[in-house]
Image (cartoon, rainbow, N blue to C red):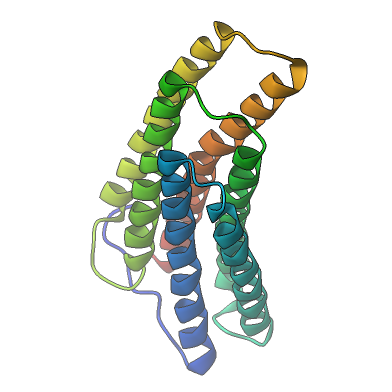
Length: 212
């Protein structure tokens, strides 16, 4: 069922614009995650501003996609899932923004915590690339199953790292409640990015079935 799929057939100008906008949307997912990785790696909290700008651009793209679909791009049976995909992609960018803002509110990360957070951030970048590759399977002959399997494996790796992070946090000396709360909030947002990317990959699989 989730092997090679038919192309997402383009019927006209609106359809071409939807695909173009979705590719742009996915590019912003990757760019935002790359900035977040550098932000953690270099402890550069100013990069949150750039991520917030990307989030604004993502909102505009989601609205553009909705408008083209409302105007009749693609057959009715595809529109709902295409828009749901755009929504989830936008949620990924929102989550990266929330993660970056949460990072600006915490003190300097301890090295053992930073190491694991950076591992997660790097995986999120790779998953962003995997998601782009999975989406392109809707426009070319490729094995979608292989693409989505990689995403699931990476998400499971993030879950394992999350468990390690929480164990380390339990042993940390926290100065006050709010310091612990802000650190927990940052990590929660960080690890949730991979969940949302996996959700987006699930919608691609649904679109695959619709095209079969």
